[in-house]
Structures are given as C-alpha cells and as structure tokens.
Length: 223
Image (cartoon, rainbow, N blue to C red; front, top):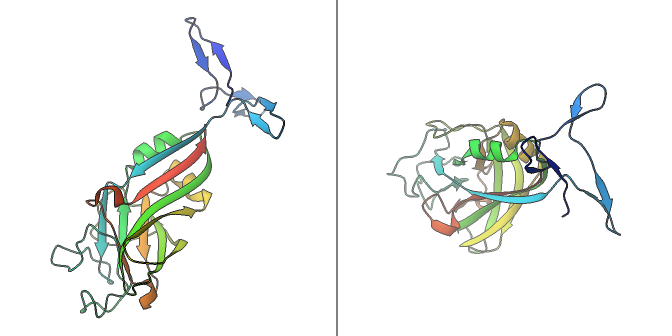
C-alpha cells in the first residue's frame, strides 16, 4: 500500500499514520485521512494493514465448581478442558469443566493502540473428544491478567466451532469487537466452557506446552 511521509524537525522522514499525527476538526483531534482510488476501491494512504500472531503464555483448567485443577487430574491442567468428562476422565466431576488461556495482553494492547480492528482469529487444536468424529468447541473471554485459582469469564460463547475428528486444529473467527476489547484492555484472554454437559461438547485442547499446536490469537488491523 502507498504511504505518505513528512520531514521532521531534524530533517528525518517520518511515515504518517499509526497514531503519530492528529488534525483538528474544530472540536477534537482526529486521525488524518488521505485516500487514493486504485481503480476498484478507495485506499487510505495513512493506514497499513498488518497481521500479528501471539502464542499463549499459559493455560489453566478448572473443575466444574471453579477451582483450578492440579496435576492429579487425568487431563493435565495446562491443557484447556471443556464440558462434562463423565465417565471417560475425572469421573467424580460430573459438571462442566472449563479453562482460561492467557496471553501477553500488555503486548497485544500496546501493538493495537490506535489501530482499527479488521479481523480476530484464535487457533485451537482439539486433541480429544468424546466422539471419534469430533464435537463442538465453545469459546469465550476473560479479563484475568495472569494465573487464577478460581475460574472467571467476561463473555460466554462468543464463538463456536465444529471439529470433525480428534487431533484437529483450526483457526476460528471471533467478532471484531473482541479485538477492540483487547486493544482497550477490557479483555485479556480466551476461555473454553461448554455451557452444558452434552457429550458433543466434551473436548480438550492442546495447551501451553504442546509446541505448534498451542493456542494462538491472530489479529488483522489497520494502523
């Protein structure tokens, strides 16, 4: 994409955009606009489309009553769990287990400062499901700045995705406002929770120690 530069006080050329310039509209300071027609659409000369991916920094799974799992759990606690595991795993917990996925939210917020969000995606790799032909993943949001001993979430089920088999990963699109909330600091990570005890939503995913299969968030933005 073309762009515009201006000469700074020390003679250096500085790229316009990215939140480094504001103009007054008579009432408030706003980002400037400069557009060019490419024969198909108007392009903003002062914005550049960027894509940044962040790997998770940690995972904590929780029992259905909200307490953090320990290493005595049959599914290791650094792998996201979702749904009712009876009778296949941890059969004494007949409720809806859940998980929080953590990211470097400070870096995400700094990177997105002043940006317009174009697309938000998460990568979740289902390692196991109750059925051989997969099941449905349910993903929400949390505002925990780091590891928590008690489960919490700010938004339940902002996205759902079907898996057709075990050991399958996919990128899942979330609403753009999720990126706005990451940028503004009101959201810091992803949750997994079925919302019921149906076997079709019994899943667990690759976690923070599972290499390329670990959870990720990918945001496309203009800045």
